[in-house]
Amino acid sequence: MTVENQYFDPRETMEPEEREKALFARLPGFLKEICKDVSAYRSRFADIDPDNIVDRAALASIPVLRKSELMEAQAKEPPFGGFADPAKLKGARYFMSPGPIWEPEIAGADHWNGARAFLAAGIGPGDLLHCAISYHMTPGGFILDHGARTAGASVFPAGVGATEQQVEAADALKPSAYAGTPDYLKTLLDKAGEMNRDLSSIRKALVSGGALFPSLREEYSNRGVNVLQCYATADLGVIAYESLQEGKRVPGMIVNEDLILEIVRPGADVPCDPGEVGEVVVTNFNSAYPLVRFGTGDLSAILDGLSPCGRTNMRIKGWMGRADQRTKVKGMFVDPKQVDAIVRQHPAIQRARIEVSREGAADKMVLKVLPAAGASVDVDAVNATLVAVTKLKGTVSLVDSVPNDGLVIADLRDYSK
Image (cartoon, rainbow, N blue to C red; front, side, top):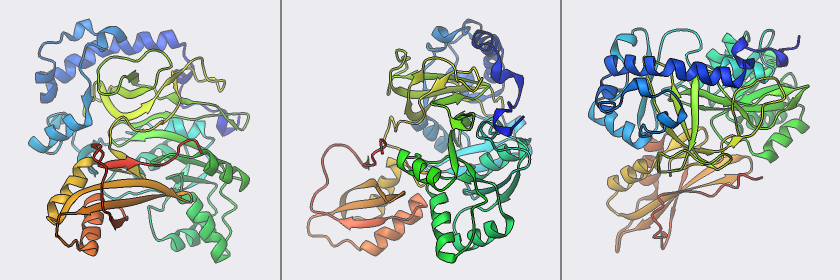
């Protein structure tokens, strides 16, 4: 049996009705547990009877927990806003994602449930993975690293930056697979060409942390690399993933096990009609860090039918943009509150907004700044603040006007190309 046809466990092929029944049979007891042990849910569910939450219609009666609310709770009661069970955090790692939002990683193998995504991408026993995503402060590197090793692959934890050294390491180790953001693989391959180094050993990849544009996927294919993607967040881990059938990518993304996924109308709690694009809302069964009807802020839609690869869980179209203005740039989220923080540090700025576009295959971030009347803006100082606040490199551009449309982050990338 080839790696691409391996399943992580038998649940991936169980009958959909059986899975749905099992999830909702489990949910009332889980809700009772977290109402007892997690302070935020004791107050949040004060008027909710867990015994009544037995199907999707009943689940929809619970308000969506959105990231803005979670951020506010964490600011009032750091680090987790009362949404974690302190008794279960022994041996945990604590991460800080932009916003800031804090997330714990509970001790144990594959806390983020990434192994299924690697096996579905054909990466597992016998593979050496070059993992080029940050292991610093945010959980991205750990999500992919643990998933790959649980799937049976070996891992070189390359992290981010130091591209020449990464190329030298890959040339020496001859990894068969890559994991990281979609555009950084191109950076590595291009740099290898400049350095006359051989990275032709890389033949498959699992990417996350940004959009995999069709043109970039095609370029990788032309260079002999079969690239699949998974949809993951720092809060929930791997939510859904692509798969292979006879070496070819199967349309859509398969929802991971142990999650209840809904598509909800942006800004509301009401589930969308079948096929309608809306916000991805997820309920997990993580008693240490439970998230019930958690609004990811991402847009997607449910696909009809089952995957031809044999996995039977619900499928979604994949990441289709943001339901709010929090925007992912180079694998990191930029939040409107960060733009406000920059403006507050520089009184000479009247108004500012970040515009995100593409420059070749990479993301480009520009902070457009409208100076206050009669004021002079120190561009270098503002740029230093931009980097310090967002943890991303960008450029600062002085402009004569900023549209009065309420947008402080504008995503100008075309996701159809």
